[in-house]
Image (cartoon, rainbow, N blue to C red; front, top):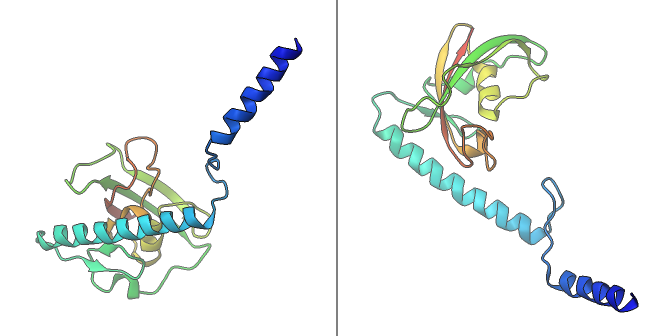
Length: 169
């Protein structure tokens, strides 16, 4: 019995020396891992911005860059007066990929959402601050402002830039 216990402990110790540890999702990473991740996102964002700009150049509609790093189909959009926190807005939006294929059959809708109290894609929440009631705008959004490195775990894969057709109801 002692031999079996000794061999088991020895086996466990030898296995743990060669095992690479990974932090859990949401866990703490060391500085090297953070730098690698930061450089990956920086390169991906530059590549996506270049691809989106090429797509824009082939379109009959003009798109304008915003301060938050997405494009919108209305000039001077993010220079308008911002809606305040706690104000209410109702809106809907459709998601498309850059082949202009609609991702979900039904639009995503929210009624009487209160600013400062709802979770939305960064670009959508920012655009809602500047959109007028009844207005419809098209957003071109790099993946970092959309569903990022995880996707939506349904139909949208990781690192996918999106076209968002947003309407304030």
